[in-house]
Length: 334
Image 1: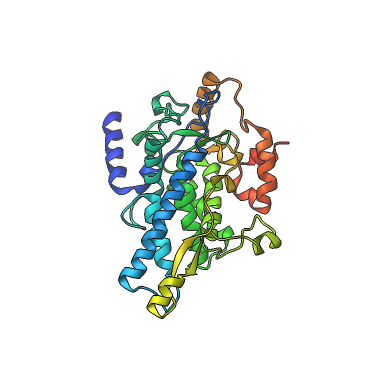
Image 2: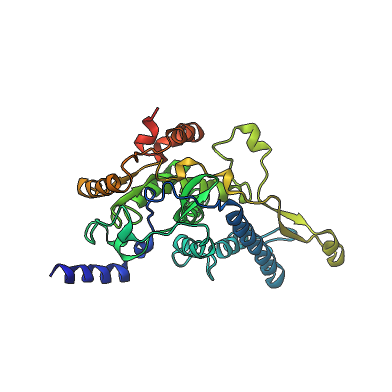
């Protein structure tokens, strides 16, 4: 009977829940595993995709006459093509963008990542009722990025949910705090408690930093983690520049998008992206008891925050936003 019920639940949510494709990670078991740093390769992948997005945006503008007025560039097309290229998808809006990117990166970084099945993880005792999404798919992989153990799902959050934050503040007139609160609601619902039984504060950190990235693509908003002087002199990733030779030939001003600076994940990443430092919370005491029992068996000396100084750095870095995106244990640790 129980087995039949589990199958029914699986089928129902596979059909009706896109959140069934959100990923979790085990940040405890890989402690002590030596992994090659993935930073350089990951930056190269993202910069190649950003270049592809810029090139495609310029092709659309020149090929279909989509310039909104003489001499300007089309921002809507740029953002659309950037999302398509970064997520490696045919559309900018439909589908599970963050999860898709996560899955692609698991393949591209397979020789540098740590892959662990659910049945060997600290979450193996969470049943279908407690965390149906967790039991429907594999865990995301762990990579070493500049000494931090980060789940590749965080890169998906950075770009996908970061875009959602950006769209809310850029198009829907929401404040950044309101966008963060939307992210909290997602973790408490579709992306967390309701589907996996787990609430990830590291996801919220990745989301927040993703907003910073999208806000600096064209520097449409100041970075709240920088002072006024730094923001004044900050450079966007992409700019709309006059093409002198093409303008002379056409006898009118021609502009196109150009990359001004390369993407570097270390402009955003820190120890709070690591769930071993920025702890997860659990939907109920039963789930927490099961996971803690596995942690005590797998790594008896583990405690969260694992590296306390990373929490101190994160508190200083995020300032007034820390209370929204850091686990209480990360905020209060000395």
